[in-house]
Amino acid sequence: MCLPALVRRIDGVLRRCLGVFEFSDDPCCILRLSIGRCSRAVTLADGTHVRRGERIGELHFWNERVPSLPREGPDLAWARQFQRRLWRSFSALAARVRQEPSLAAVKAFRGVNSFGSKYASLHMARIAEQWGLELIVARPRNLWGGLWHLAESAYAVALIWAYNPNGLRGLDLARLRRDELWISRHALLARYRSAGDDRRLDDQGAESVGAMEET
Image (cartoon, rainbow, N blue to C red; front, side, top):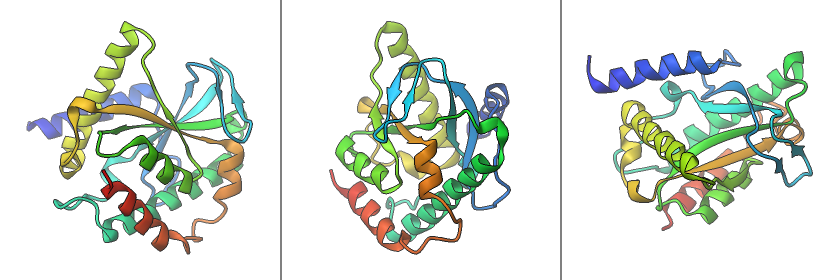
């Protein structure tokens, strides 16, 4: 078995252990969901306060469905495809949240992503804001947290290598960080009402590519 295949198999095992599930049968959905516990108190911009230990939705990329990056890096065609899939994913999540009683107590949703120094926090915050997301820079608070952060970052790099290897181009591994992207339940339901409402995505895709190309 080749190493990328081994990483994908380990990824499948970990998803089952963590209770990660597909919340939509839309073939364009690129997100999965699990239910976790908030590790610290968080207050979002709309006033949503999540206490430590409260249930939150944990968002994960559906790696097999994320559009493959060109060798030259993200271009407008890739950005438009990614934007449309992400919009449909959030719209499908909003629909599931409205319909699923077991998600009624979930106040907020969090995704964790890896960024190298090429993608400065200011640029990523601007892109996140376009999607109604809030970027929170996660800082390890002790040695154990630092080691866990390092392990998560290494695993994230392995996933990129296994599923979308061109995503490693331009990634500064020495300055890799794990940032959190949050959206409250209220903001999710208010913003994502229709999976077909993607009229703004062409301009939004162009803005995102421009932000990604800045250094």
